Length: 136
Image (tube, rainbow, N blue to C red; front, side):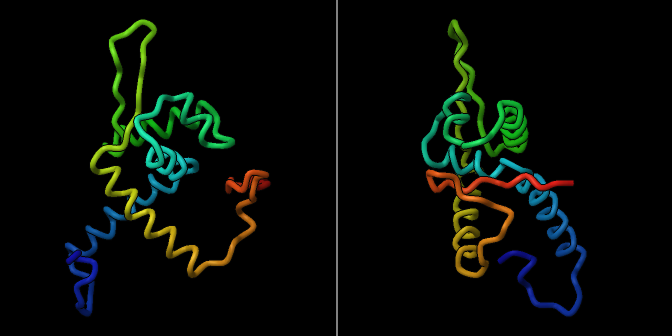
C-alpha cells in the first residue's frame, strides 16, 4: 500500500515526500508531447526516430528529440545505438516505461469515464486527438 493511501489525520513527513516525488514525475510527464511519445512506443516497439515522428501527428522533430531525451534520462525509454553505417538508433520502453504505460491506460479510462471533452483538444480528420495551440 502506498504511503499516500494510509489514513492519518495529518500528512506524515514520508507522505509529504511521496507527494512531492509524484508531483515531480507528474510535471515531467505532462509536458506537451510526452504522453503521445510513450503511447506511440507502447503500440509498437522498438521504433526509430522518423517512424515515431510519422506516428505522432503534428509533433516537430525538435519536440520529439527533447521528449525522447527526457524520457531516456528518466529511464522510461531506452535509446539503443547500433554500430552501423549509417548509424541506426532505436527507442523502446523500459520495464519502468511499460509499467507507466499501464498506469496511464488506467488514467485514460478514468478521464474518458468522468471528464467531458474540452476545447483544449481537436480531432483531426483521421480521428486522432491533437493539442490545440492557445493564443497568449
